[in-house]
Amino acid sequence: MLEVKKVAYSYQEGQTILKDLTLEFKEGHVYGLLGANGSGKSTLFLSLMGLLKPQKGMIAYQGKPLSYKKKDLYIYRQEVSLVFQNPDQQIFYSIVKDDVAFALRNLGYEEAEITHRVDKVLLELGISHLKEKPVQYLSYGQKKRVAIAGALALESKWLLLDEPTAGLDPEGRRLMMSVINRLAKQGKNIIISSHDMDLVYDCCDYFYLLADGKLLTQGTKETAFIDRELLLQANLEQPWLVKIHQQFNLPLFENEQSFFSQQNKKE
Image (cartoon, rainbow, N blue to C red; front, top):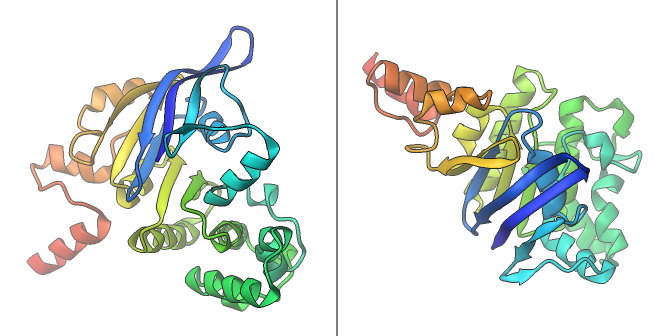
């Protein structure tokens, strides 16, 4: 379990980004961390990775406070992986297969095991055909999937995705949603940070909504998005499935697929 316990963080005096924030992430769930730009989502992710140390409160993993010793963080980051919003921040090698293998080689894995893991995650993400391709010729969406592949190759227990659909065209967004849903079905523990309400509604089963560095509200699909006025105050919109549920007295569908499946049955 990952825990955020009364965490506060400021980049400079008078500019507090996280304010006494307490959240709990249990295994077996896909969490949505929602908030408008400037709400503290990225700062929280950097704190969860030990890249920032809270000035108050603490991050805990498996019931123990996070240790900031280099050796301890090295071990921790094999279990908790972050995929940055901009994939260029974590792609280092010129060829796809070498980049995905980068962390495994640093950890001293045997080449046979590295090859097995790289081939496995490239297949899972539908990018096996890019294995030998130079990264410079990839689209932005392809780079995002390569970055995710590098994290998955570590077989981390937790995967943190920062704005996974940012900068993608509609087709790229659809592919990314498919990847996330497939990983969720495989039992991967995932936390998605985003202001894309429809993406997170579709992919996640529990939600934390942030505003101005504080917890605005939390809950399931049935509870987290019901108060439209509260969301608007935080510069957030209701997911479209929640809107039609409230405005047209329709059932609250779990995702887009279930909604359109129901409509097709009516026809």
